[in-house]
Image (cartoon, rainbow, N blue to C red):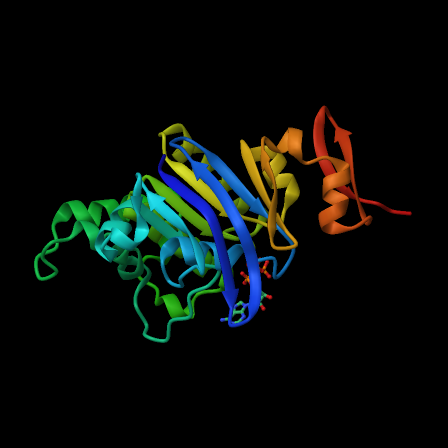
Length: 255
Ligand SMILES: Nc1ncnc2c1ncn2[C@@H]1O[C@H](COP(=O)(O)OP(=O)(O)OP(=O)(O)O)[C@@H](O)[C@H]1O
């Protein structure tokens, strides 16, 4: 398994966020996490990345407990796209994406052409060539989000964690990102993505984890586990599940 989360529980001070969360991800899975605001999705990602430490349970990459990995080893295995990344120093977009190559660079005084090539590849994959020489801190929110995803692509890891990667993106870029994630899956990589759009989960993901009331209440193929009853348990009765053009869609209930 690329990632194993076993009976993980976390609390901020005395406030429990989630309890006994267990799941494992194997190669070639595109898995979403759904849950309402404040349900603990970002906290779970931060625990997996080792930025904060769970109170109970364990996390392993490739069968090795995360606590036994050095940071550089984690960076070789896992790329992480945060919701936002406020930066005041005017790094150029090209430099931001090059930071994704850190674990591949042995000598920072002599960065090889191959590293710059990988940066160009990631920029081109997300059509960011025109922004390459712009300062990151002068970009729009959506442009910044695209650059952070490009940085993660440049990292070339087996596992990618993305925290609401399309939340600031226009529709075209949302589709470009989902297409890119589907391509990663095809290449045998594993992707874990938090999102607030249940339709994206139904259309693009082959597995969904649902966090609700501090527990993982569902884990399985979206078309099977995302029943109207479950969606209403999570999001309330303002939504309904309908079949539109032979595809399941979550729609607002209008009456
Ligand atoms: N540093 C912190 N100290 C204390 N509580 C925190 C901290 N960070 C987050 N929380 C709380 O933990 C809970 C879970 O937050 P988290 O950001 O993980 O939720 P989320 O599911 O990612 O939410 P959203 O969908 O709104 O991004 C929230 O109630 C939040 O207020």
